[in-house]
Length: 111
Length: 116
Image (cartoon, rainbow over all chains, first blue to last red; front, side):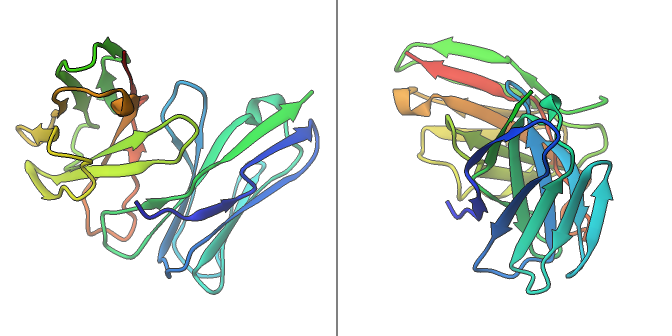
């Protein structure tokens, strides 16, 4: 099925470092969501974005809805070991049921 | 319930057997979605329900896969004559209803299916 391009695919970082990841699409979206999935668990919603250019924070996490509406970015500041997991972006057009999910960014934090 | 509940959490079966996976959505959520996540992959949409109807079954991989939802609540995903390539984590999500601008999907922990 259709998927978004998410990069990087995986990254190892040192505790305390900042992390950036992004998602790009060939289609315009009206909603972007960012989820985190821990091993053996389902994805948990981190941040939801509804407007082009919107910048939203949730603790150490900040996400932005790209101006072109074809991309979104997630930044994690001062990473800690529990940030480890898989981060997924998901995009949808207004009022539709179907979210298209990215392929995921696997984050590993070295203490 | 407080969250989306899926059962069983793990299922090991032999090739050729049928399996049933259950999803109990968040109370009051009328929309329900099934996804498949293969090892190291993203989420593959399978089917969604609005109430008891399934307007979009386009993601079901083959006619061995079927799903139903009764009473606008619990859903069952059935895989007949399982094959080894069916091994994956099957995730269920629910949302208040489709058509909303803020249609957030909440996920269960998934059922890990292993076909031997």
